[in-house]
Length: 260
Image (spheres, one colour):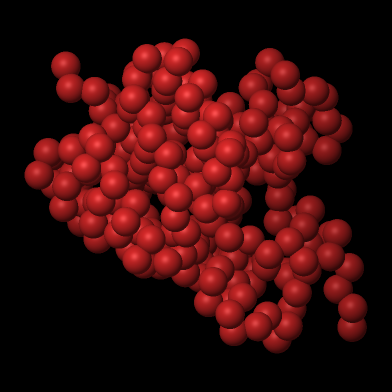
């Protein structure tokens, strides 16, 4: 059987790395995209290739840049001939708390490009490939309640981009359903720092999460794995929160302490 190929943007670290490990274990060939994490990408690809025996490649590129996106897709096709799954994990994020008027034009445009336009750049090149093979799985990453167009204090650019992406994900799902292509969005909860690369069995207790433990990268990768399965073709256009029951935006607002 032909082995399936998955492209994971931002796949060298964090949630992307955990997804890469999950898919490699399931027999996928991987194209691991990274922007700055060269060493991490190389070490990961070599480790997965040695452990599971499938071909792994690393591709440097900034998904916020249209030219880089074209290069990423061209490289994957030259190495694997097809792209069966794409996980749009990469997305710039400004950690500093800023009101909308405090963003520079460059900051705003970069966040919008990296979290919304990047999916258009890549989809324009990848969807025709998936149409030819009459099969494809597209996964985007959002945040809790993104489908309700909520406000997110101090995160205006990121929230606006991801809200647009939620609509785009559902549009792709409708437009490409007849071509055997599904598109779904996974919305992680408050999974922070080192927990992004941890497994569920490693999770420790947390009183702030209703289910009683920290969220991990495996919580997200398991959902992604389910959505890209052959038999998950009836699930498309869905926006799936994986939060442990936490009100993530409510927590963010309560911590903001907005000045008058």
